Length: 200
Image (tube, rainbow, N blue to C red; front, top):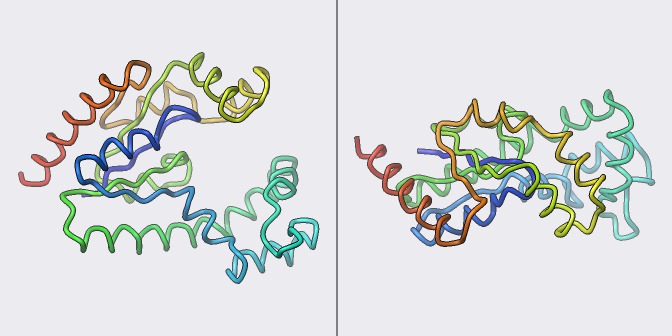
């Protein structure tokens, strides 16, 4: 069984993944895989450099993420082109990672992805778990974590799928606005349920 884990920025997706790991559950992080497919030597990076030129490369040949972000956020068609180059490769690699983890015999595995619904990766999951926090807390955590001002943090949150839509598409929800103990208890309960589902 694959459980897709998602949530808005600063909702605590990695914290939740680590809490499941304490129960012996492995996970694949779509963000890590997205970085892998644009590393030096990867075909996607070559295609990106060919389209946008040296301005999207760092001195060491790696991807200049900031420069690329500025281009694709300013032009919707360039963003769509970038997604057409990266998304199929990300998906292919996610499938390979998930199959490897499943072959290792875990009772179920997590696919942690900030864009689980937006990217269509939810189709790969048997259940979708949304990590939920109030928007005010998202803004506060984002500003502190990413060292951005309140307005920028609000803009980042506003650019994401609305909280109400994420919740409407969830099979399961974890409320991560409380204490660490509260989070651990919710994870333990879901772990018990997922193991039962797998056996039924």
